Image 1 (cartoon, rainbow, N blue to C red):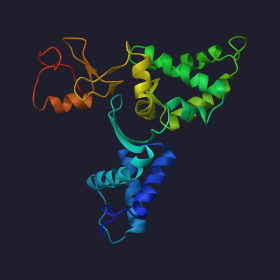
Image 2 (image 1 turned 180 degrees about the vertical axis):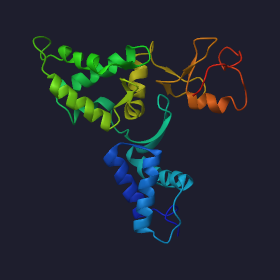
Image 3 (image 1 turned 135 degrees about the horizontal axis):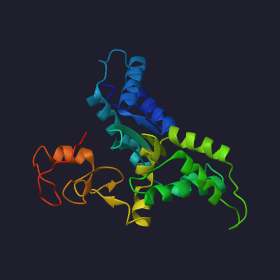
Length: 242
């Protein structure tokens, strides 16, 4: 039986890789799948992206009972497609709290809140590091987090997908967009909205030239294949999707 239709060592190895990296691009995921297929199913043809989708679907059938899922995310700022391993069994801040100290968690929360309230949801790294002055113990006193440790945390959060580099600035990473979407939508309704087309939380997108509407680039690309007008104002769409 094909390795892409029966749950096998290929599926188990692929899931382990996704759990280990937390966030992985589609290109990286396909390389992992090819490596695993060569190792465990050498008689099978070299997998392509269609087989990757099948493997992910089969894994999700198995792990959904544990409130876990591999979520495919199109990241608008770089137009990169990721797979994000998401554990949905507890609240997102609870998950982070298991890994970091109270001060480090406070720094993480400050970054999320600052990004949520900033136009374009991005900020410079220096501005991000300056938030350490607001991380204090007991409601007052000196900062309980050094800038050196904050730099280490930013580097770590970039590597596991909580943050992302958007040009020269820092922004929400794909993992944050998957795990913290409802949290940010509920706590920052004036700054975080839903895409009119897919109804999913909208962090980054493209703005109509004729009205304030923002939409996912990927959603608009599909929409414009059928209609050439803005779904909000109904005027001809002119904004670039590149």
